[in-house]
Length: 265
Image 1 (cartoon, helix red, strand yellow):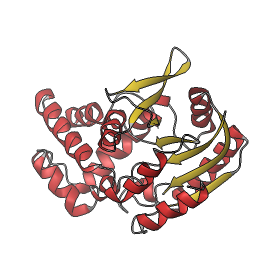
Image 2 (image 1 turned 180 degrees about the horizontal axis):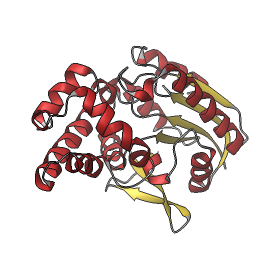
Image 3 (image 1 turned 135 degrees about the vertical axis):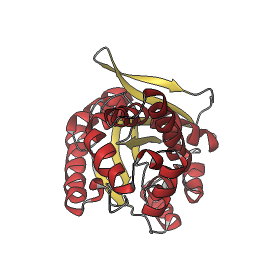
Image 4 (image 1 turned 180 degrees about the vertical axis):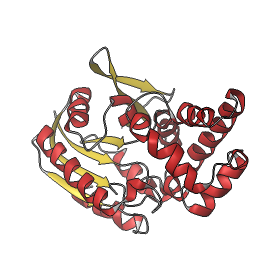
């Protein structure tokens, strides 16, 4: 059976809270509340010394944000116990802020009634995000299956305990070992989905919504990421691709209607 593949980005698209967490005043508060500020981690040091040097590893491995933060803190002289506590607390706060915006609910409601559409949440993220996205989907009464590389094969792993006909796949770069701009990411997605795709709709900010202090939001990087990602999708699936580029500040309701029109719902 052929299907329409709807690819939804997470941070900066489905979850506006995930990028708002990185706004300077909110991030500063989180660093203080997590105990990181007391260790000398300012907003600038967070981006330049904790996130920047570890992002490639964090987004392409199962190490996770908590472990990476703790490792960087230990390297700066923090005790292992304090480093682990602060890193865990900060990661929990970040994930708690990364909710799916309620304005996307009409899209999930409409998709739940249509078996012609395969929904894939594709994200460059840390390992912790897979379980978190699963919990967010459960709030919409959706089940989830994560695509993961295991013994050189891409497998579908059922996530959570919710069962039912409404299900989304989660493709997290940390689970697939490669970021979305790389053709290998989409080759692994295709192998994991095991379905014939007739057309593709992509809803993504390509990093444009991220905080300006985050290297990921550099406009040149965003444009290159967009071009590389779309080219990789087209090359892998050999199917027509429609782009619905979403950036924080756009009307989610209007975007939902645009997507539904594209898939004739």
